[in-house]
Length: 96
Image 1 (cartoon, rainbow, N blue to C red):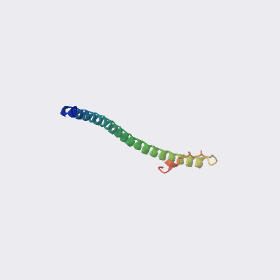
Image 2 (image 1 turned 120 degrees about the vertical axis):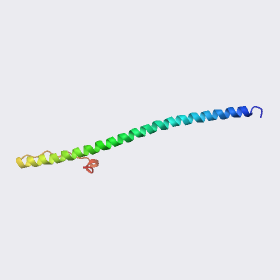
Image 3 (image 1 turned 90 degrees about the vertical axis):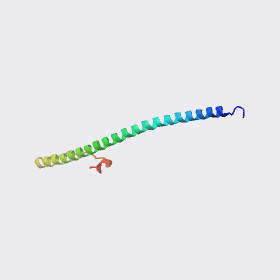
Image 4 (image 1 turned 30 degrees about the vertical axis):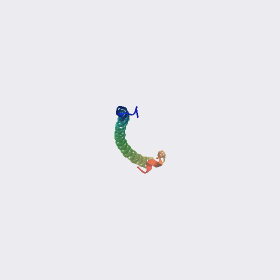
């Protein structure tokens, strides 16, 4: 036990504590970055939801407007054929 004395053991303990501290600091930095990114994504999600709701309202208004125009067209020009309505994707039709 010549080389394994109190000073060597203390130096090894300090080295291990330093390595653990460095790893912990690195992980804390990564966690901080990830929390910031999650906050950004949550804000973006809220904004996207509001945009989607606004777009759905606009599409509903446009569909209603199209129906009114088609009704007026067939009333005043019965021989005229209105254009075919656009195809609404299945994933969106449930929202409308």
